[in-house]
Length: 156
Image (cartoon, rainbow, N blue to C red; front, side, top):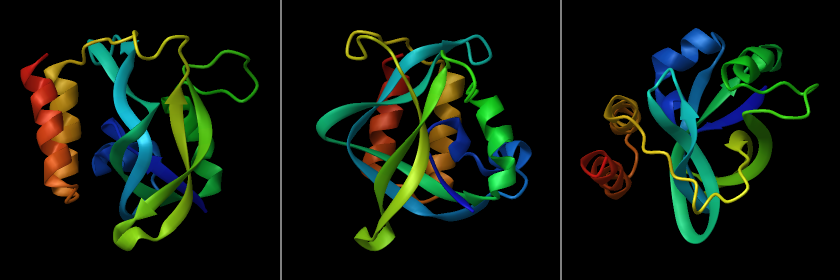
């Protein structure tokens, strides 16, 4: 089984089930010293899509799904990742998150690689942000974090 940390549109359980039928919600999780950013443009979403950028003291909330290792290729495809290609939209990265109750867990997440992440901001569409917010609310993600997401919608 693969432990996958979702922090963007894959927070949405229906989307994850469509992409990886074996996916099963495990827990809410917090990734420390990263911030949510929008550094990659998506024509599907008409704006920037979620990424995580290293940032001391920041945090990204998400969820951990367990999925069958045989479906990893399906998730790779939906994230624009091909292990046999030199340049990818996102790369897979091994990270340690804090699960409910502060227990640490090794997970895999997708992170977009850009040269200057701090200056590469592509405003997300409100439709995209609202999907993330709705999914985060349904999963019981930290209300303060959800309010930060809502502020991003207001400022878009």
